[in-house]
Amino acid sequence: MAGLAAGLGALPLRTALAIKGGRPSRTARGAALQRAAHQLLETPLVFDDPLALRILGAQDASWLGANLEQYRGASARAMRAFLVMRSRYAEDELARAVAGGVRQYVVLGAGLDTFACRNPHPLLRVFEVDDPATQHWKRDLLKEQSIEVPSSATFAPVDFETQTLAAGLKAAGFRADSPAFFSWLGVVIYLSQGAVAETLRYVAARPQGSQVVFDFAPPSDSLGKSERARRAAAAARVAKAGEPWINYYNPGQLVDELRATGFSTARSLAAGDMNERYFSARADGFRLYGSGRMMNAEV
Ligand SMILES: C[S@@+](CC[C@H](N)C(=O)[O-])C[C@H]1O[C@@H](n2cnc3c(N)ncnc32)[C@H](O)[C@@H]1O
Image (cartoon, rainbow, N blue to C red; front, side, top):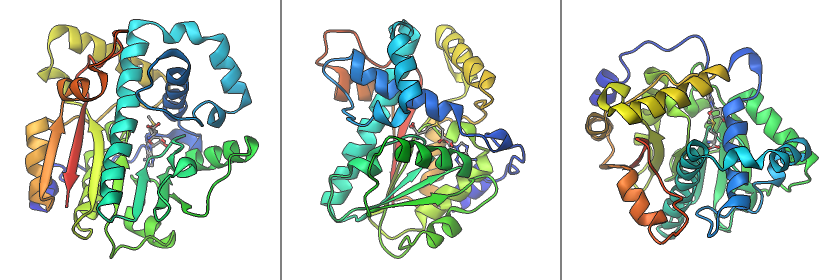
């Protein structure tokens, strides 16, 4: 615990929330559009999500159809490769955890992730945690699109900056005394280090067999010139959407801090690892380019 407390938790909580004014997350919409575009543009699929288009709602699905061209550019493709890889990786790791006996899955910062409605694991309970306004918007979309939410799924509205995951999950009926798998995709870069540290300490305190998978990015000053320029362009786009990237980690330090917090293993995976795993057999050049990384830590 000392590592995260000192290394990540020392910074004050950010009081200005990533999502301002109680409106749904625009980056959640952007990620969902990319997953839907993937279903339409790439073969074979890296991440097969039969609900990806439907969850968008009629208006956004038809907007995507009319604007598909802009998803064919190099930067949109690189961003999409990362987005679909992280979802695929999380669900692959989840399947492994379920095979090992885990029966609870917590989707942190779920956005329009559709796993809860596609859950193929009969004994798995799914807890969707998200900022309240975004979760409300998603639940409206699910209703509007008549997407059935199975009884295995429970929604837990939590603002990571001002509320604790422990309280949100407890209210949702999560069993804190049973192992759980957590995914946290596309979220930590928007949060204060204090909020991230608090959530990771909660996960580290779960029973043995628990695990978390999340993506993160190394600081810009650790990148080469062209990657720094790519990062700056992408960062400007999300900042314009009102959800700036504010939080970066040095991979080696993060591994050490997770170990010090109580995780028994922590592995940081770079684009090369993931290209080999998910993109090596392709002929269309769809692959990872950037500096984004995955973290996989087990209790
Ligand atoms: C880029 S989206 C990613 C959504 C989803 N995980 C995905 O991969 O499509 C960022 C998500 O983080 C959530 N988020 C950002 N700040 C948050 C906060 N302070 N508390 C709770 N959720 C937050 C947003 O609501 C949104 O769902």
